Length: 131
Image (cartoon, rainbow, N blue to C red):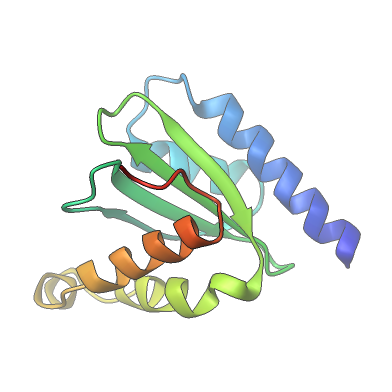
């Protein structure tokens, strides 16, 4: 199982590197990575008020590995990293929100959950801390 986790992380990173320069929207890049690596796109959301990122997405694999993508504020860079179950409590509310019908998504505020996930990622050293 540990080898599968490492393989999923490696495949995710390779797929992320392969789509970085493609002329696709961030959402299309995240969906393509999920499709290419047999993962499941959990969410792809806009980040409001963060000085470093404008969008974030997550892809989950059957091994429990989760790949995270973040689009820089200027829209030029896509950052990727993987996590195991340690971030589940921050990812699960966003996954639940994404599964809601659009009308209910519009009524639900997930900005706090997004900010908590970004803070957890920064604390874990996955992302550069903002200045």
